[in-house]
Image 1: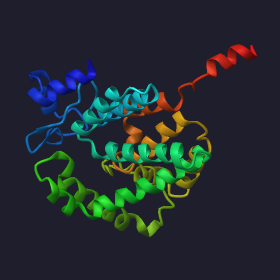
Image 2: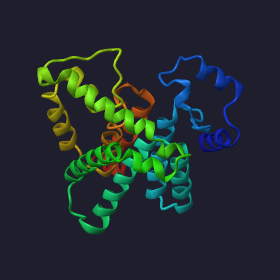
Image 3: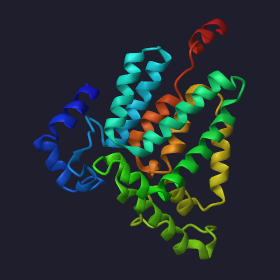
Image 4: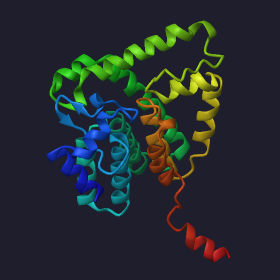
Length: 257
C-alpha cells in the first residue's frame, strides 16, 4: 500500500488534505521542500520523503535476502523516484560494500566495513557539495540535481566553522534556531567535538552482524545530509534493521534451552 500510494502521489500529486497540511507550515519542511520545479516529492503514508526513501532501502535489503529480483528492482526504482539524494547516496555506498564483503573480502569484519562506509560517505558528501554546479547541469529539471541545496550545504559548513572556530568546538554552542542539515554538526554543537569520535568508535565497535551493519551504514551515511537524530520515523526504520534478530538466532535459543 505504501508503494502504491507513493506512485499515486507521483502521478496525480497530493490530495487536497495533504496540500492544506503542507501549506499550513506545521511540518519542519516548508512548502518549497515538497515542490522542486513542479516535481512532486512523494511521501505516501509516512512523515516525509526521507522516511519513504529509507523504507525502500529496508525493503530492498529484505528482497535481497529473499533473492526477489523483481522486488529489488521495484524498491530501487521507487527509491530513485522519491528523490531523497542523501538516502540514495548512503544506500549506494552500502550496496557497494555489501558486494565487496560478499565477493572480494568475505572475511572482513563488519566493524571494519562500517568504518570504510563512514569514510566513503564523508568523501562523497564533500565531493557532491563542491561540484554541485556540474551535477546540476546534468539534468536541471530534476530534483536529484537541483543546485540550490548543494550550495546551501557549502554555505552551512562555512558558517558553522566561521561562527564557532574560536572555541575550537570544545564547548557546547547549540542554538534551537539553527538547522545544520547534518547530524555530525548537530552532534558537535550539542556534545562538543570531543565526544563525536567516542560515539563513532563504540558504534563501529559494536557492529558484529550484517543487519547491524546495514542499519548503521544507512544512518551514518544519511547523517551527512540531515539532522537524523530528530527524525523519529527515520530512526525507527534504521533501528528495526539494526536490532532485528539474525537468521537462525531463534532456533539457537531453542537448542540451548
